[in-house]
Length: 86
Image 1 (spheres, rainbow, N blue to C red):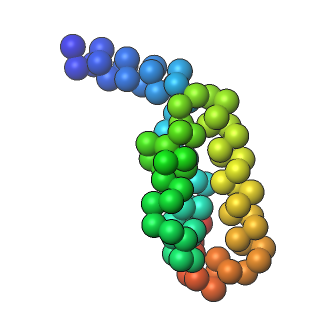
Image 2: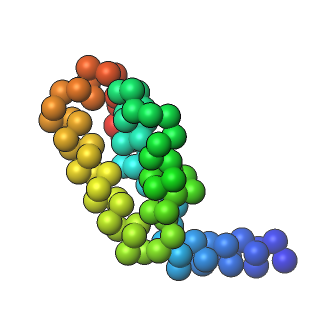
């Protein structure tokens, strides 16, 4: 029974979009480290955010997080704040 529930949960996660990705975890961590309002982006990019509700929103959000990270990296503010990226 446990195996079946685990497989169903995995299938539901894939059908619904997925879970928070590393680029978005990195972006949020750096945003908050730079003084961003605590939890202000969690409802969108956080672990249970709206980004992860469908495959199309997941794809859009991943690209948005990557773009935001690129801007932070090229501007130099991320390094100055001690942000790290995986």
